[in-house]
Length: 117
Length: 112
Image 1 (tube, rainbow over the protein chains, first blue to last red):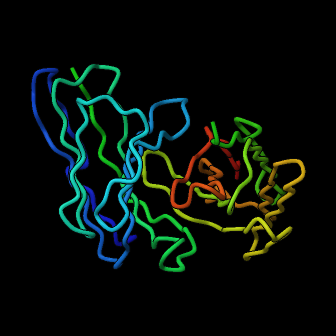
Image 2: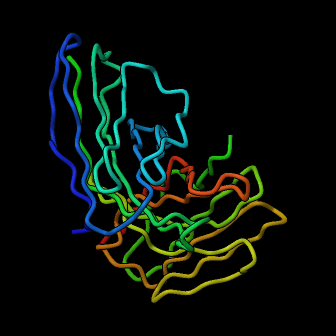
């Protein structure tokens, strides 16, 4: 138990569906992240939020839409996905290194395994 | 791209042997971290080394950092079957705080 909870753990969706992934952290951190992990590829940093503000969008297609309503919750809204979007989506949190003196250690959830048919 | 690259991609050793994994990166960093991932699970933080440090120890783990060569190594001594996992390095650049980039990882198999 890392203090970062992701739901659902598994999701199967068609290309026309709309679904959301949810991440919640109970660590009091002020930075949250979405990463995508595909087979045999490096983890891809998708989005970064610091103090609820998006500070990174790593050229992610608009069919992925993040939402950070507060420092403890992060969502990834999915719509009209492609089969190549099938992957393990990992959420992480950390204490901001620049303003809060955090070490930069990332705490990951267990991931949401997404399959797009 | 800032992301690190681990080497080798896969490593198979006997229990009790030492395992060494390497990481190379491209830009000047703020710090470098190593993570472990069991199959299909989330990543777990192992150790962090700052850009002004050269070596760090934590239990059976030893990490070195050579900023002149933009490389780091992770040594696991006296390996155990339970160490079987994928290992990743992550860096954040000095100008890009809180944005951590990972490599493809080294898949370690420790045979009992």
